[in-house]
Length: 89
Image (cartoon, rainbow, N blue to C red; front, side, top):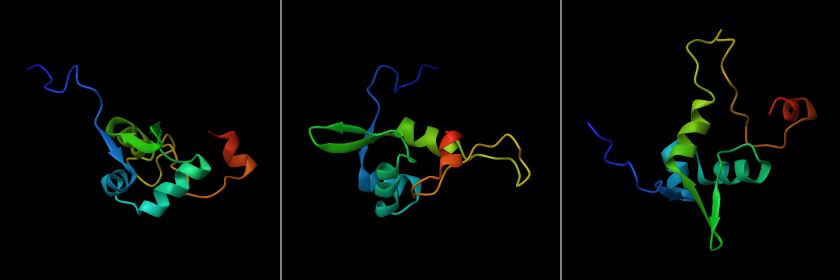
């Protein structure tokens, strides 16, 4: 069955809706944007928007099967990163 979304542009969410989509606060998402630790965003006419696909990809970085999962990525907290943490990006 063909994908009904094929050929359509990605759905773009403003910051409040993107935060709600991720289940985090608006302020936390803004901090992630400031520190460069968050999902990819776009500026369109001065407005910040997020593609749903980018939000899903960013949240998938932290996906893991167990607490001992060695191959899991790390979603950094919304704060300035240390030099050691920056090296891992």
